[in-house]
Length: 413
Image (cartoon, rainbow, N blue to C red; front, side, top):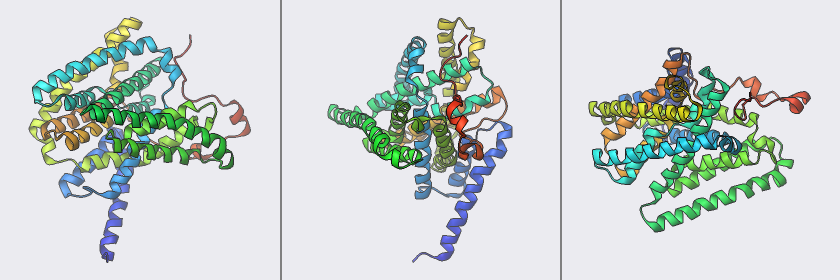
């Protein structure tokens, strides 16, 4: 029978943790530290310093909710019309990014003597922006509507490409495995629209305000399904967000601004647990001098290349100078979420050594810190909107005439 004192101590520990995750990061934002980085640092201190919360089932569950919410939010932001409107720029951007990934794979494979599949994952970890993280921070950087739209479409397009490459890299061990996994993923994609359609026609009319709970349930179930396929939770959550966006006309509440705010609030509560849990699993070897050196080298090589690729595309399509393009390139640098996910896969699936894993983590932390220091001011990370604004019901006039709060496309002239 559990000791009551142990139970009380455990409960008190979680209470202290809640206070630390929701108060300390807010306080440190005045020094331009993103709350995600602070939460990760708190986890590292708890894990490496005091051996707390390692392999903690409660933290694992809460962090799963966090990563699912982050990629569900990113999927809900996918607007096919926006991507079509910027197809020319997007194709150029993705073509350059593909070339960069290919070059990175060759260099990584020869430098670290790893196989091509782990080299592909390391390349993705270095070059893929964390879309959900980036979209949540854009409003704090005083960018124009055109610049925000450009960042949004290119970040979403790059993440879509990265998810496809991630799936192929993880499932390409054998032709049979790739075929079965592809069939399973296609089945999930095909089943999602009918599921949403049944909910819209058979359940939603008799279960008002159930859209949010249904969306989260489907996202979690699909995320666990893709996790079983070996491509982690993020693919399933992202697919559900994309599918929900497609039903905006037949079921407006499923991808409305109010739903986006609700998912942001959900992510604002659970995302800190993901970053804290990732920090708690950190090992001392991950932050050795060699790991830090590898991370700094990654930073010095990858960041100029990524900024240069953005400048090249904007010079090509808009005639913009390199200096002006940095305003757009810098907000796209953070890779924290994607890099942490891939670092875990590299360690657990491929047994990649500590210096490379630690180098990726150092690189991700550095890229995530840059935008706040360059643009100034706090850098929110899934900060919840004001609660009264979220839960107060819209008036009759608001329902009929309120405009969309988020721009649907590039500004017109």
